[in-house]
Image 1 (spheres, rainbow, N blue to C red):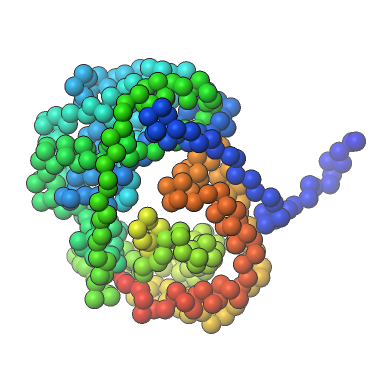
Image 2 (image 1 turned 90 degrees about the horizontal axis):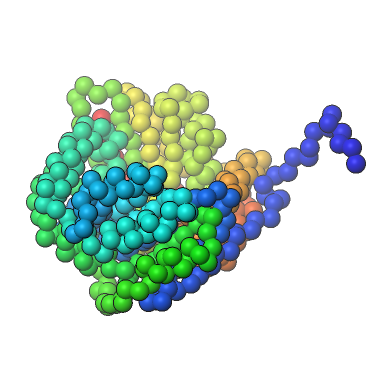
Length: 427
């Protein structure tokens, strides 16, 4: 058959596509440590994640989770910080450690052929970190300096304050680092947090790339031999009172010409039946460049370069936040337009053409997420860490494809009540 190159190919909407989440293999190492791995690579590359319950949720002392993550690879009983970093650089590998609200993640990026050398090094970092006192002092100095610089930025202060208003200043999701918290950190605080929360018995491992049984065996030979001592976790409960004051204005820079706006409310996490439908509504409202907020406040009014609405689901709660930076003289006008767009969504059914555009945007993004081993692994990580199976993924696809404009209007009436939102303006 000869192609007619004068005839363009047929264009299909993303809603017409069938989505397939590549399967992940679940195994247990000899000591019971769970490993989830995905062979989906064409290049000789691998990503391995070690996930620990070591996020801010588990802090007994403010700032210790970030300090522990930041210092984890800065020395063991056998190797100094310089030796560890030089070895990683020699093999062209990278080890990243980060602490979020719920989990701490150690990620290794490497050529697959170097795993046999690098896995013992990561094992040493996880099981034998020493947290030298001088490294802690350097970390504290750098952290304080970054904090002081960031506090001069309106958007940074606004992010701090909106979380504190939503969850409460003593809640892990609302608590933020202060200079005195960092200064008060002692080496024993970090060592205790490390011993309690970087125990392999509580870890989960994820691997993706050009991998197979050989790489699984290499992991088992290193990480599957250590006997795991499982300790019963004590449930942590924190009140989330939120602030009784719903509007908070801060003059952070008397000479500033720009104001940071945060408008937010508490919102359920991924386990709630309204979460997937709200992903669609939030996208239409402020979740992408063609959203209602962008069209009105950026394109029509010219108040900002960008305004977005985002959902932030955590393991123990969540929030919905509208965020933007505008000229200080139009802050109030921009806020007024945000609430106006909420009212429109509550009172009027969205146009079918606009809804189709939003659905195609969401589903097109999912197609991209299913195109590479590392992004596929991230999709699986989210499912597994939240206790979901792949059926959750397919249920969301069905929601994105079939939700109606009327259903979105009812959802807006449920969640876009102005009285439920907190408001922070920092100038």
